[in-house]
Image (cartoon, rainbow, N blue to C red; front, side, top):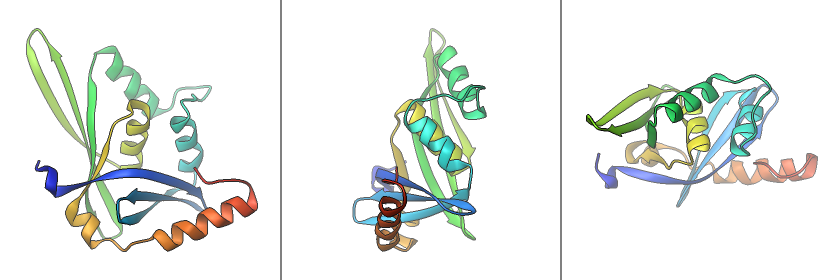
Length: 155
């Protein structure tokens, strides 16, 4: 993959909504909006702050399994956007006495973001997705203002 084909995610903001979660992907020059299920806000908050649930969640199981086998998450890529749905790829690697193995997996962007939180891994957005997306920075500012007014800052 060519570096020029991707834009690095600078930050993100997770805003719980009534029936969903708005995830603002903040890049240099533009903010993209991804919507996911309502439960994602709580799950993302836990993962971003390094807190675990009383019982392991699926994303935590994958993270623990990878750590156990010394598999490293190298990067997360948001690769496409079709019919209102984002697509993501996780790139893992493992190196041992037999050599280096690289594995690229298709993933839901919400799952990919959770893995990036746990592994402190960079997230990249395909340039074609970035260029085609509407800039939702004004929506982000309104959501942050609403969150501050209602109960404190958005994540």
